[in-house]
Length: 155
Ligand code: IDP
Ligand code: MG
Image 1 (cartoon, rainbow, N blue to C red):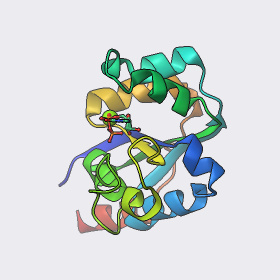
Image 2: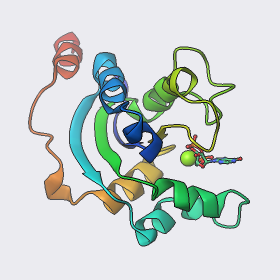
Image 3: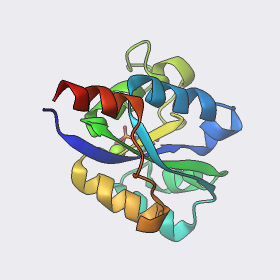
């Protein structure tokens, strides 16, 4: 049985402004992942620093903080089998120019600075990022989606 995980996904401000929220959600739903948290919000400086703390000191850090605060984001928690790697697979590589065709970043973005979507890279960062954006009571996990039912039927 593959491992069930949670991950933090965000449609970044460029994705929201370009009207890609529905398209991005659709790709995760189509894959069979389960949406358990969703909100639109403006990221504060404090949230941005927490979220991207691992990149502090890198040349693109200040621009990254400005980018993530340049408009509202759509913050989401998705659950499912191997969802952390699976979501990053759907998103494609950080640089849209080398991301595989068919991935979100390859299909909808041109440059690394504006790559429309974020996804956690490990179980530890997933839990850390979820806690920045969501309170536990804001997550809705008490329903079965179709993909979960199918996998449970297989036993
Ligand atoms: P990821 O989003 O694919 O996990 P990270 O290396 O964690 O990539 O970088 C976080 C975000 O910072 C990227 O999604 C991108 O928006 C931005 N970024 C990363 N590397 C660069 C760079 O070399 N130049 C400009 N922006 C970058
Ligand atoms: Mg990352």
